Length: 290
Image (cartoon, rainbow, N blue to C red; front, side, top):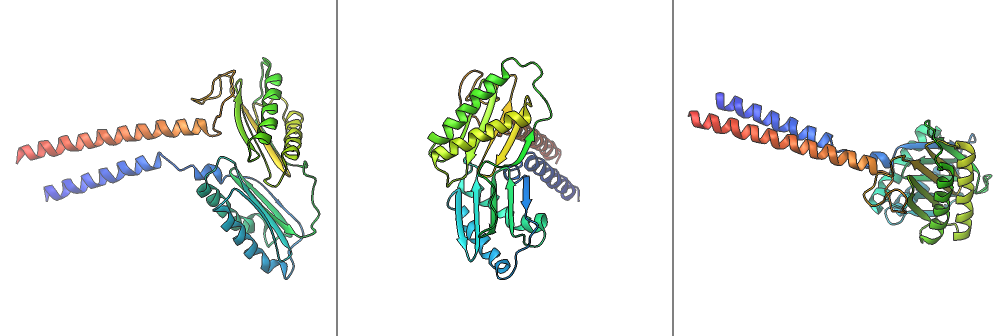
């Protein structure tokens, strides 16, 4: 009975240790599927359009497993999706797959037009002929609550970083750009069917909106109809291993989170090793008493 009880305690401790380890290393999918904003038309889809919505969404979802942007028109409905330019095909598909189920909760019964923006992707649809907004229409903005108190050339650095985004999206080949410049991390992307020049114009408009709407905020996200731009200011330098203050780099938007996960994973692994050594010691002592 003593041996059976000891094994039970060992199995329980191993299970709890493994559970702690896995809970300390969450996946990145949650970051990509955080809701940013939603837009829903007041008008509702009428027959036969309402029954055509599901096939349209299914078609877009299937496309998302192959490429980061697609737009299509089917049976009187037009729709499109786009994933952030640094997502893999698998992450893109997983992100877009979240939206069809969210549409019902966010917009109620099928709206005549809807758009759902997640942190890693968006999906939109509307009835053909539905009134469109301008390509540079402001849809949503988020300005960081903290502000840069000591200017220290922040405005000039931010404007230079925005210029990098404007040039970068046009030369990147996929209308997407990320980079860092003197303590600023910046990101921009245009809808996949824009030409390079139109993309540059849209990003320039988004940058102007960010300046006007958010001023000296330490961070901002600005979404227009056909593009978006974001920035984050790090007084001590953008926390990436590949960039430093005063140089352009290819930073990653989730650097701080990646570092936190790495530290958490190492700590959990260390705890697991300590537990295993403790168990080995206990078993060795018990074996010596027999």
